[in-house]
Image (cartoon, rainbow, N blue to C red):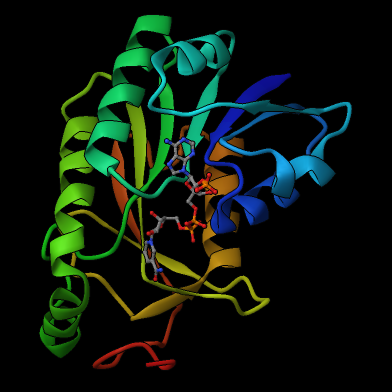
Length: 211
Ligand SMILES: NC(=O)c1ccc[n+]([C@@H]2O[C@H](COP(=O)([O-])OP(=O)(O)OC[C@H]3O[C@@H](n4cnc5c(N)ncnc54)[C@H](OP(=O)(O)O)[C@@H]3O)[C@@H](O)[C@H]2O)c1
């Protein structure tokens, strides 16, 4: 049995990953969230729910014990969140981390879409970049996930790019990102020590189609 901890389990992408992982009898899920309201329906014999705040070291330390993989699907002060998670994972000897950030953190988006993205979210990207830097400088075995602009189509259709390559496309469904993350959790040797862009193929353009 593999023990998987999801931090920020009420988050939108996390809901899709949880649904996918609950199909796998070899996974025991711990869903960690500030409020359990949204995730109560997921509770079953293979899934427990723990209420807590990632920035509360005592909460995090307690829930990390015995975990094999941590998937962080968070928003807010990403630098502080990453720092706390890395420190507590190193202290509790949990080694595998999947952490969601954003497209654009390395200025890796070419052309007009890159310029548009910087105008729209450039200032918010700074905290995501700092979070990625903290994780990349750690001893953890990590996958940093950089989704394109998120939409809620009921589809799984994605391709990936690695750090150092130009970002492809403009958008991707949350369901696709959830499926990619579930795949990494089920095959943790994939995209290890990597920072990975996730986009829907064929969505190149000056901005996402819904803008
Ligand atoms: N929108 C886009 O186009 C886009 C593109 C690329 C990347 N992203 C980023 O990708 C990430 C995941 O996206 P998403 O749609 O799944 O985000 P989301 O629905 O906003 O989920 C983020 C979750 O983080 C939780 N959280 C924040 N601080 C926490 C803490 N201290 N302790 C415990 N939980 C905490 C929130 O919990 P509460 O419910 O308690 O607040 C929320 O459930 C976000 O950072 C998002 O900004 C977005």
